[in-house]
Length: 538
Image (cartoon, rainbow, N blue to C red; front, side):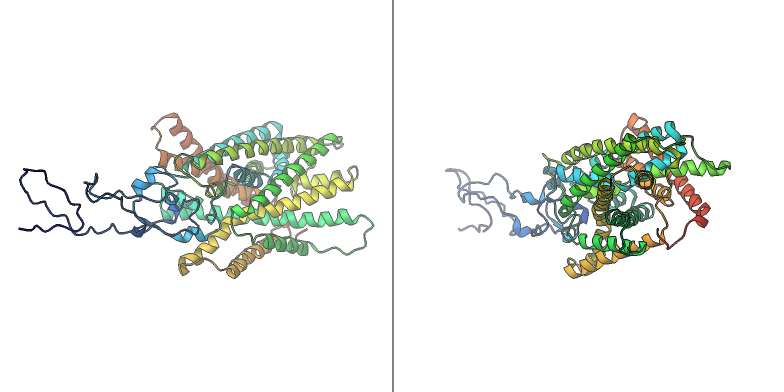
């Protein structure tokens, strides 16, 4: 009597003399596991930007001869390599995962071909620049001892939190890569709290930095024209607003580069120019004789409250000099990552090289600038204004013009990396609604809209010195406080241990300082409001 044999089962030859026992039939088909929708933060592949999604059709069953019994009744699921940069932990977490392709359409995660060199270029370009020129202003209030102490503590503190963010970028247990600062905040604090605590400082930091860059670039363009044209030049120069517009137009034109990886060369140029002009300015200032009649005694207001807020505002200026942590995760997101070669290794290697150069520029610039000019450093413009005001007569026009040109190039380069998170945010709004990538013409419109919006704000704000402390206070939690709390929540160090106490202390202190710096910044702007001319840039 014939037996019914399942078509999907493998025939087994019975042994001679064995009882013929009918086999338990296997199910005719096994329904595949339905795809699981994953958040955009799980987009981590080096080559995923235009790759097909993982679907059950991609699973190839193991080939087994018909006349042999398979080792496993169920074929082992194999995930393609391009979906598993974090190796086996991700395979366990995501067996059949359909990923949202939105990250492949956005500027920050569109390309993942970065390396340690790219990381060094981006970190150096974002970590040094015009903000270094304002550091000597803080020394005029803090003095020698407290100025150096505050600068050293701030540098060590922000380097520590930088390290924390690099380590928290990818979760080896779940395979998730947090490619944006706001994403890791949402994962730790929830969506509502993250937006309340992080969205405004992050956006304000990007926009505020771009506004300051427009002010520096526009005003320096005017100085460059005057230096090249000479004292006897009869050519009519542009107004300050027109110079701001020229810089904004150049920044908008350069901003059409598609993604963060594509501006690595721009960041390299910006880094070189920043190092060169910082070195020239402090070396020329120290090489010349000190100004006659200068003093190093801290200048403070007559009232006790004025002194307090001026000190806090000066500390906020130092904090503003070390902004840029809102770009750490974004820079690391441009790198490929695997279980054997995680992205944190090249990222930290590039960061260490970049911050060694940053320290070699910031400390001599702040200390040497204060030594050369003392209390005569202008609050609006810092070392740059002092350099042009006091060294124009005894320094060649070539050096003066070169420094101006390098500052303009650096401002244009830094504008691109600080504007990239805003470009990413604007395009994400479109991709979430339309479920398709941004067209080239719409990308041009969005970036031009941002660039000329920054130009309007630059014209409205009278000077960088008036907003430096306020911007530093607003951005301080992003740099010095939030990474400590996220480390405690994600790594869960031993309670009441060294790391537990360290991160809690730094996080709480950072929040207290942030509130204090913001109050001091608002007070300084209010007190000096009568001296400022809004919508009248100089």
